[in-house]
Image (cartoon, rainbow, N blue to C red; front, side, top):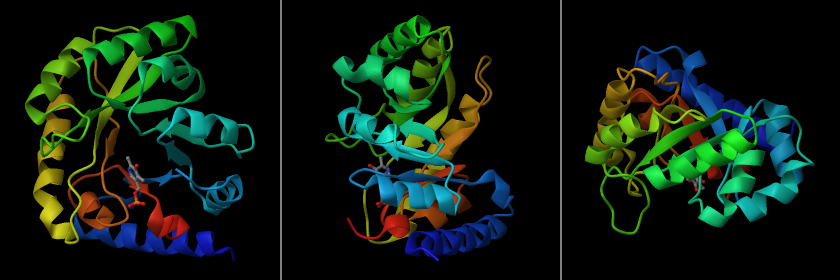
Amino acid sequence: MHEIALRFADIQKRLRAAALRADRRHEDVHVLAATKSRSIDQINAAIQAGVRCIGENRVQEALPKFSALLPVSKHFIGHLQSNKAKAAVERFDCIQSVDSFELAQQLDRHAGNAGKRLPILLEVNVADEAAKSGVSPDQAIPLARQIVALEHVQLQGLMAMPPYTEDPEAVRPHFRTVKALYDELGTLSGVNVRWLSMGTSQDFEVAVEEGATLVRLGTVLFGPR
Ligand SMILES: *Cc1c(COP(=O)(O)O)cnc(C)c1O
């Protein structure tokens, strides 16, 4: 078996165990393969192993790969520049990194022109880190209320990338903060929450214990970059 398939099988085992610990259904937890800097062969091996969703950080790196990939859902997980918004709307199935009303309006306009309704997530800067993009936790719900009025984007949840630490337990309170916002988001009319995108190679089991429905995995799936 391909080493990526072996790693994916091991990830599934760990996800099931984490879901069980939290009394959750493992079917409710999905894997997004974080594919920045990975080759087409590596990504296709992951898709063949059972990955149904990939995430790219840069539009210009992603687009040349797409035509050579097996069928897969394509999410954008990086910081989106205005001049790349149109191409991103046309080629991605979900934009996870929406952090302002201006960006949401731009995506709405491009999605309208492309004749589609685009799934989006709000990126939450859960620890209010100066160097990171994302909306601060206290602005997430007000921003969501503005966005639900837009016709061509569909708000489906939240994404977060908490501060990196060696100790996954240190991230747990941040995951809890984002989960609480996600639950509140789910009570707004016009919002059908589906994706709570949090947890990476370092801490995905804790993220699942705290309610993640989508974990974004790079290293643990593909090996070191
Ligand atoms: C690279 C990346 C990941 C995956 O990180 P790993 O530690 O390799 O699992 C997840 N989310 C985002 C936004 C990334 O850029």
